[in-house]
Image 1: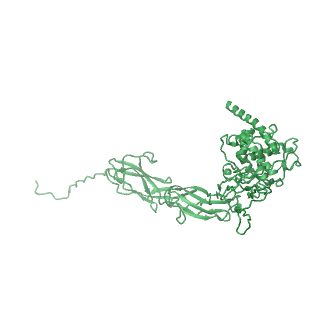
Image 2: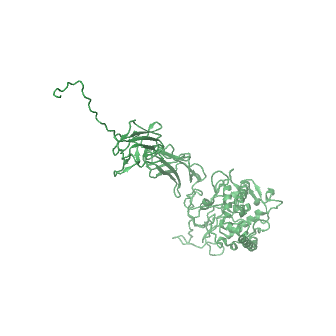
Image 3: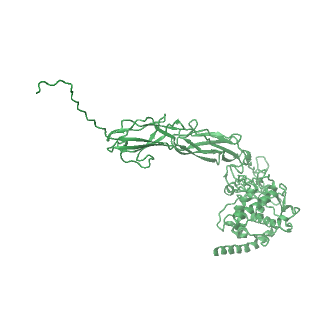
Length: 587
């Protein structure tokens, strides 16, 4: 607790120091100064806050330091009769926030207040960032679900006047498979969205172009690193983590203070759009473009070496009289339309993949490809590959097949034929280039089974001690009344019919070395479901013994084996013949 209090005191001291500096800075830019007493956080200077570098925090800029609107709010703010929700719609045009956009900011504030109450996120901060990043989703041009239409894209972050960020999403979000672009109302770069994206409107998708998803993602991002946004120093660090620019911080702070003084709801699509984008990474010649959106690409500016704005003479052409040679502007690549951009690869309802060895799988692997806006995407090649040692293959004996998605976006692999070895394997579906999407399905091959096993005859099995049983034991296995071929059978000499206690004397089999063994586990029924057991021998112990056979699937049969000495037969003396004549030679 003491350490917690000391942390609060240190942050409080920083708040006091930076507030004074910020008021002066905001006044110099003709923006209303942030007032500590009026809102949850005061203003702060980025250098005083350390721009996140002095604090040791390493989170990158959410926007990739892409361009943003630098317009400042008017000096005169609307009256505040009660709360911002009570303000009349007739207030300043700049104080109006489109209905869906305003609802998204407030919903994000409520959600974060539940999951991270110590952050104390104010919705007005989201509104300030949304104003600077996209002019409140281009004045609230969103559909009924809150998705920007058309989608909002910044320029390619190709290092030419901007940061250099090579593609991280295969163009899934920004339609650019070469470089990243900031996307959506809150201008997230794809790599940041991959980590922080949210599904705030419950449609099952994390869409950076949806204001509800984007606002919640921005709120959670600003609250990272245990920040308390009611403290000016933490708020400044949060804003600088979004875009590491002192000018950006001052601009966001200006709108934050303005919206704290009052705002009102206006219909979607009627908001005021700022007009002055920034150039975040100056180069010797480019200057900001004159377009009206954050996606304006800087154009070259002729250098001027004399007062009056005349361009310096360039290299002369032969016979050209010293005319200038303007540097040609490289063509701006056209982004791939969202309807043609691969967005995601999903399971199209594939059920459990299980089959008995040697049998065909009932279920087939099926995937669904979507484009960048979530619609089904046709003609996408999907490679399906079987990996494992069960011997399972696709129909036709192939381990890899390629299938293109149909008009409904789905691709279904051929049927699988289970191998003879029981075990697990995987089927992997891969689609897309640059950053391929991958789905992996687990599959199982179970051993062939039998639900019944019985002897093929009823002949008694008897042997003398130390001798071999003259008659062989033959059994037949079935599964659902059909012959069960290839079923594994275990033969064990036991003392009891359930087979709980193994027997260590009496009849036995012989192993490859001729040594006695009383359990065999390598037996398998033939193509007719029959099994002829190896020869059985008797030791010197007489008695009745039990042989138990069990199959994969739980069927079993118990067979009696008798060891007894053969009975000796004594020949009888013939009876005297009383009818014979007496011997006359005898007295």
